[in-house]
Image (cartoon, rainbow, N blue to C red; front, side):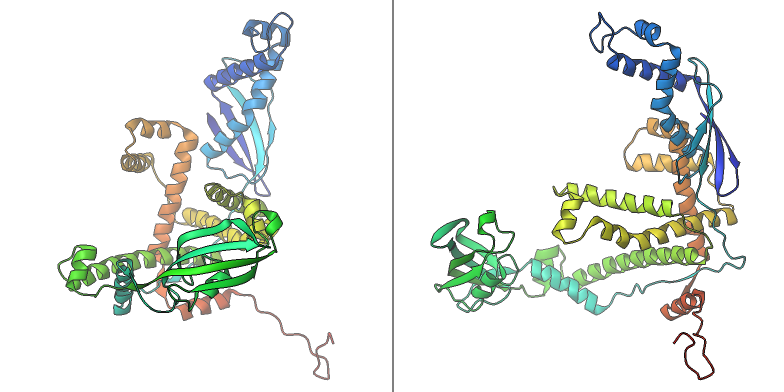
Length: 459
């Protein structure tokens, strides 16, 4: 597939696309197959009509029309990707003659594209780099986390407190009839963890081993079966055992048993090294994001609503996939938290708009700094990624020979290199300096006009 791009006015381009004869033949083959499945001809079973009969009955024009209908969108998407053009609307597609088997097919599309951002002639990038300091308090917190993981529970003769492990028998009933799913023997709960209904959790507090208590509660609206929702229920609770968490001593034995170090000092050193590496990585990532945000803030561009909507749709689809793994639909989840899809859309809009602005600004930075990735560098990058994923060399050749795939990877690499360049050029500033820069960019709000008496003219 070959493409040629002509820039038009009003952020539009005209793309000339020449589809290879091989792809045209492939489209005709698919079109014939689809028509054979759907066409009914007397004397033949549906889906069993020979190709020659389909050609004779429908004619070449009908087959060509089906080939275009089923493949033109795919050809267009591949052409846009190969040409490195990000479209933001549906194209106006035209062609002089339809496709013919064994011959290339040429068509053109006129479409709106993302506008170009402009950057200041005296562009200066600056951003805050968060502190990567690792304090003794951080080391102690990590030690206590490991200590908590190594804790054991021991039976005690004391009233139940939050954090205690409690073994209980529990039975619930409504009007004297047992609730099927509210009967439990030797149930282990952590007091104050929120696993039980609030009233039951509160009732356990202060109880001792062997003590019984009867609690009356109103069942929640989501109670199953639905006929019990909102009903008054009685629960009988018997505490059978109370256990408290006992923490191990923070000493050399602890370091050896819990982490495999000879001494507690060695464990602390290892924690410090790991925390310092993590803190530096997090600080570098935050500085990188802050530089990109500063670049976007300095760009002048009218952010297209279509690109913002597309970014929001991508985010919502990602949320949908994540929730589906938990067996929940997005709309169902929004109902569970008392929200609607429109409010979610509006909530995502500011961040989506900022992300689109930053990407447009980064495109402008690519052009400003003449950043490019040649084929050798691209191939080396793809080979590196393939090696990390244990992919064969065939993957490298497949990507390099497929223009849309190749250019998608090239664009990602160009944007990464551009941000690397911007981060290297940016200077580090304090949060106060960053706030001052942000305030300087905000348009000043004019003071209300005063009349002769010193009052607001609008009053």
